[in-house]
Amino acid sequence: MASTSRTYNDAIDKLNELQTPFAVIEARRKAGILPDSVLGIAKMRAYLTRIGYTPADLDRLNIVHVAGTKGKGSTCAFVDSIFSQYQQRHGGPRKTGLFTSPHLMAVRERIRIDSKPISEELFAKYFFEVWDRLEESREAPEEDTPFGSKPVYARYLTLVSWHAFLQEGVEVAVYETGIGGEYDSTNLVSSPVASGISTLGIDHVAILGDTVEKIAWHKAGIMKMGSPAFTIEQLPGAAEVLMNRAKEKEVNLRALKIDPRLEGVKIRPNAVFQKKNATLAIALAETVLTKLGLLKEVSESKLPQEFIDGLEKCVFRGRCEVKEEKNVTWHLDGAHTADSLKMSSKWFASEITGRRTGPRVMIFNQQGRIEAIDFLQPISTTLQSINEDHDRPAFDHVVFCTNVTYSQTGYKRDFVNNTIDPSEIDKLTVQHAFAEKWAAIDPKAKVVVLPTIEDALNYARGVAGASPEGEVVQAYVTGSLHLVGGALGILEETDAL
Ligand SMILES: Nc1ncnc2c1ncn2[C@@H]1O[C@H](COP(=O)(O)OP(=O)(O)OP(=O)(O)O)[C@@H](O)[C@H]1O
Image 1 (tube, rainbow, N blue to C red):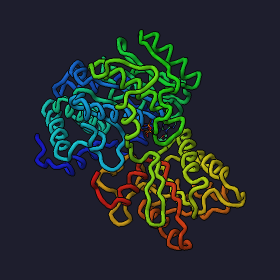
Image 2 (cartoon, protein in one colour):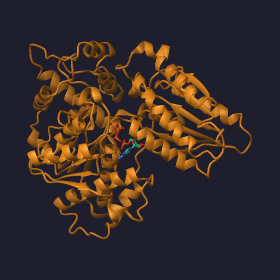
Image 3 (cartoon, helix red, strand yellow):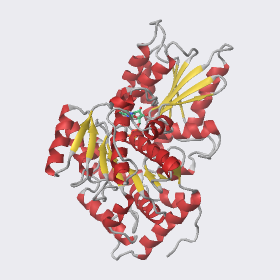
Image 4 (cartoon, rainbow, N blue to C red):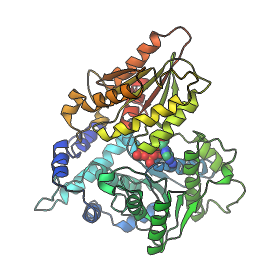
């Protein structure tokens, strides 16, 4: 039966129903049930058929497929930005698509056309067309999913992206994997124009495994015979697995060193990790633009101006982002793994070293992941290392909060999260554990636990209000993209993208 409501908000409400509830996740975890692997891909193929396409249709999108533990979103954003420069100057690629996750401020950011988030209207249109097609093709007996005829949230959005891009006549689409690669919902593409594997490290261990080698095996699953693949320098164990899998698949995999043509190109932040992401993006964009006939010749000594502008003008919000307010400078970065938080805290330290004065405030969120407690010590160590006065704490104030947006109205619709323990929000168990740990690491810091993002931002503003005239609070907001997205939404006091 077709749904009668058709607005963007209705679509997001329906989408939120496709989140696996916390109780189900817990029951599966206790029973040792892992998410679908081979079966998951088979189901995805069936869903694609039910909405009217075959995997061969996806080849029309000239897909660039990117996996990795860190930097895959940034790499995708660079590639998209380079395409955008070619579009502006040469009118091609005709239309571009970008599919990324998670979102920062609104779900529709995940599906971009010509670099802009798809409009609310188009999102709702394609969302409900997919919905109706799945309802109409529903089979008895009902499939084994908590949602009847629909796949889970991330898979559903992947279907919507394919439908939207194919209907809109997208000529080239950049796809970021969600989790892993081999069994990721985006991995129905059989002939990408190029695949890229960004920095590998440890994340999602319950699904991908607990070593970088096991994780590399999954990520390598996006490489396809007949399509060139690129990666950057990796840990030796990971590099070996990637090379072995490339050989098995008869894929020409090139491991790239930082591109010397980046010398003098002003990428942000000016850090080694970002140069690796940019290097990968250059190789991917060169491959696609050459295939489309938009790049006639690749020079080994100089990047085309379109590439330079694409890299320099690339905006990837919520990653190493700085916002100035009257007496608070907000440094926002959605890093949420051990390795990326090390990079991220170095970035914050470099931002404030010798240039910025005033109290330092860290606002940190990780939801329900007590193991993230180990991420805290390296952050403190990095900040201590820039202190000339060794008695100064790493941060004067440290705030641990949940990822609930507002104190009065709770989650913004696009941030509703049913996958976490609802009672945890009230108990703040993880936040209190983090606070205790920080108090032990850095006893001079004032450590507080607050229930919402809004409360945390107000706390930092309060510190600014109580500081002497002329001092500017240096606030570092990190630990989760949900936190950073919520914070940006509040700071800008608008839902506009
Ligand atoms: N190559 C890299 N190595 C280590 N850390 C990185 C790298 N690239 C980015 N980061 C850090 O990780 C954060 C997230 O970057 P990005 O969104 O590109 O990664 P991602 O792979 O898409 O991760 P996720 O989707 O899990 O956030 C950045 O803000 C930065 O702090």
